[in-house]
Length: 63
Image 1: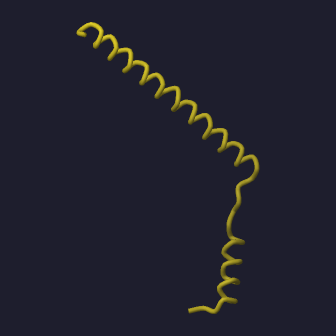
Image 2: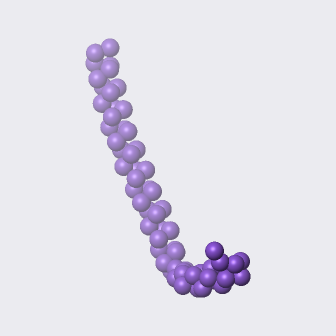
Image 3: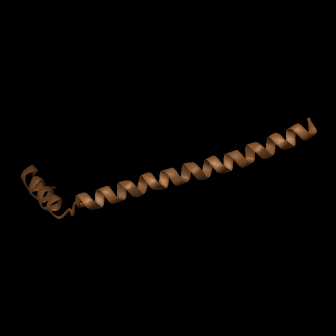
């Protein structure tokens, strides 16, 4: 078991090893997440529209 002082020293040395992303990397990955969210929303809207239309057609023809 280490004492609190050693723990803090080890924690600081580990945090110093972290490679933080640049501003450009953050902006790029954020934009990619938004684009993929929009693509997924459009895809699921299209699938929902096709299924809904097919069910309405099916139910109106037999109902």
